[in-house]
Length: 278
Image (cartoon, rainbow, N blue to C red; front, top):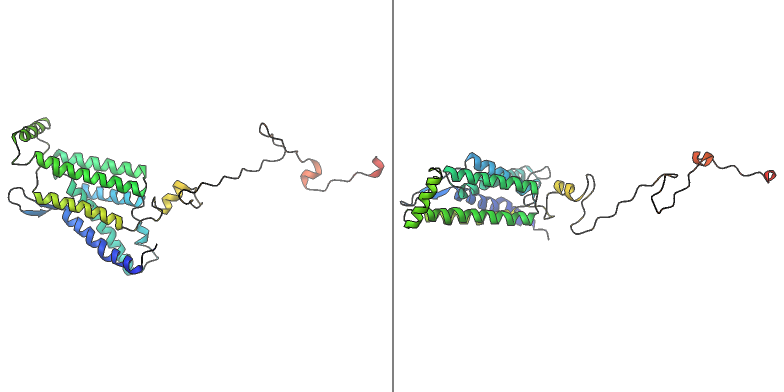
């Protein structure tokens, strides 16, 4: 069922921008452990690269259909609003990685490489829309647990003696290159809210109706170039075999077709036998 135009306009011009702006602002939020001071971090260049790759994954898997937001079929104001929404989505995607990656040290490098390889692999695999959303949700929530539950617990200033021994051993093995800094409790709550709002915004994005990939990519997967893609679940029609010329040797078990010779092969009518010849 098609959504009414008024609801589409409200979702595109009001709901989605507010959600994505909240994600972009909350992704850079940090609170101190001891003094509770607030500060906001901008996206790093690596976070911007990861954000671009994530938007590419959303387009390739059909979660986002950018041609419904910007195109010649829309008026100037609608195109400006669609372009602003895409730019906000890029910034929010970058800030999600800012929220889930360590700020410095070897752990930041490892997290960036992990996200980079994961996004490149997803682009190559081209999963369905549902699988891409499930995989993204699992990855983001797992990264949240790793950073704000495990690492913050290990590097907490008021940690137990066993935790301090573990962190000392880790720093000794890495020659002090980990460089992780724990955060205040408010940072974890805001980051969790950021992940949930971002996933909810992805659900509201205008995606492909086929629930798989975009029309151009769907043509390459489900059909041949220049042929329409079949609906999902419908069996493909059998191809018609090319006609075999007369006189060509037949396959085993088949009867060969008689060859046309002489006037019949050239298209001229065959001569009738004369009664005197009998």
